[in-house]
Length: 236
Image (cartoon, rainbow, N blue to C red):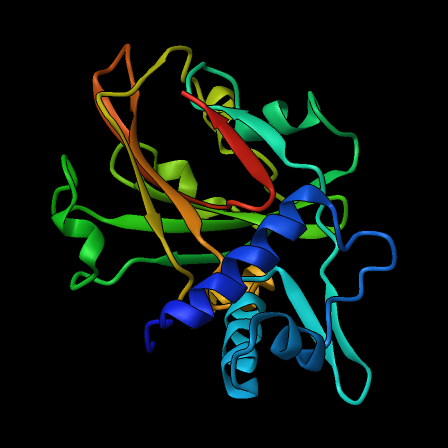
């Protein structure tokens, strides 16, 4: 994507500061292109470039022939990255309007990039993918790459599963441990955008970790979670 020039950056900063301050929240309508052209003395194409960027970042949306409007922002929820309770339990502590649906259950192919991750060997892995909804909107993708040799019951998992934590508890895992947790910021690919219903430049926080049965000292799963940054803030 082409970088914004100095004039475009000035317009972008003005609009983002106004969004953060709530200046456009009364009716949600953003300033017209003409208004910004007159205000900053810049060509109209540069105002349009800025608005196109803000739309891809998920801040606004456009209605043809009417204008651009501020996208409604839900209040972010706090996610505590440490602790030994499930994601579902953490979410239910904040909101009653939470649900999780299974979107994929499949055996992972041997050429999958997951086999290059720490502690993941050449055994059989099953991917259990869940989409997390908060207040009716998709907010996170949770992918568990489960080691079938250490948890063979994963082969019987179906789409009624709601919590991997409870699944492990039901099958005899009493103590969990993790040897690492890695956070990074990424942007959604086409599949992620479809699942999360977000724009191309909405940043995602990606959390990768391992989950072990502490009593048997065996790896249960490698975990990847993608959080929409407009729905969460994080406590490390």
